[in-house]
Image 1 (cartoon, one colour):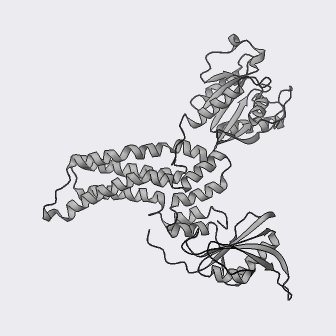
Image 2: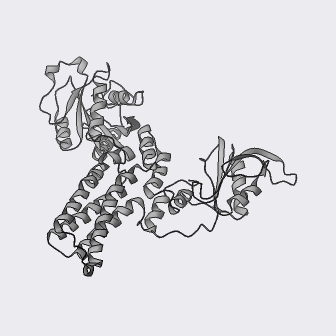
Image 3: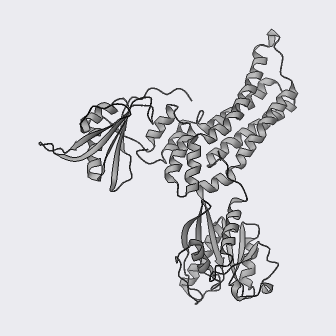
Length: 455
């Protein structure tokens, strides 16, 4: 990506969430941030970089009465979040006061910031790479501590550092081949085919391991859906409440009590998991129950994971056998509920899916069920720094690996180095797209449009 032009305009936005709060912040960034800010409030002391100054917020009447106190902090370029001059006015979180400050800033020549524009300026100035900029959004959106840790790690450059050695090795190889071509007449030794193959082979394992990290990174980033299905009165809602750890679903001894899907989001070891309690699967007589069962089948089809609840006190029926067959080959497990009322020897053996006994009444097997669900969700993948967390990340690494495979094949076929270089440059461009060095502007605009205004 070419070096950006110096920032020409000043942007402003309310950087705290909508509504009332203890503190609300209006942020300005750009060449006129400081000159506009000093006109918005009555400062008690002149602004000084990296120092907070107490100020009065005045109303628009002729008497200019004080309506609030604020702290004004000035960050001089390039030592700011955006690398431009940046001013933050922290007043009390009254929407009226914040809107007054913002409207004044716009009247004085500032422009309302687009979603994510402050972070986009940080990226364009080189203060953050694209993976770090994306991590800002992920940190704001985090719903579990694990998600926050993952975002903080990426914001600290963990993914960029993991990619850096492979990029450097790729650049070294490209430089070696370019030198052999450019100085062929000066008796510069041409790189042997075996050396090229060795270097390409050395690049592949760390990038393949990085690509494999998407399996867990995607789960940490996006979470999963678990559908709880089974016959009526098998204890689905009771198990649902045990996993949620509160009485979220209505529980009754009357079969068919659950007429619609009920969902709740929980976290298992930091993995966001949406549990969906479904209506019992059976031949329904009433129209309402039929609609509920239809939604249950839709939830079953859409879920990432399936928990089939069987009544340990009852023999399998035809509907349950069909359900087990349908779940075969999918990430699924079976809970034999009401095991406190049934002998272990009475549980069916050959059901084709991992199973464990549980009792929603006594709590038996609930901890083990949580562990099995977590293992099913993660596939046993361990947490590590620098995970790929989005499809964009994965596609960049997969494109890099594909280009390296093409370069290796070309090298094995004794194709001229000029042609091998085309594949190596393609690998480098794909790798650079991960951090944003070669990412097209339309993709950048799409990424930053997902941010909140003020960040």
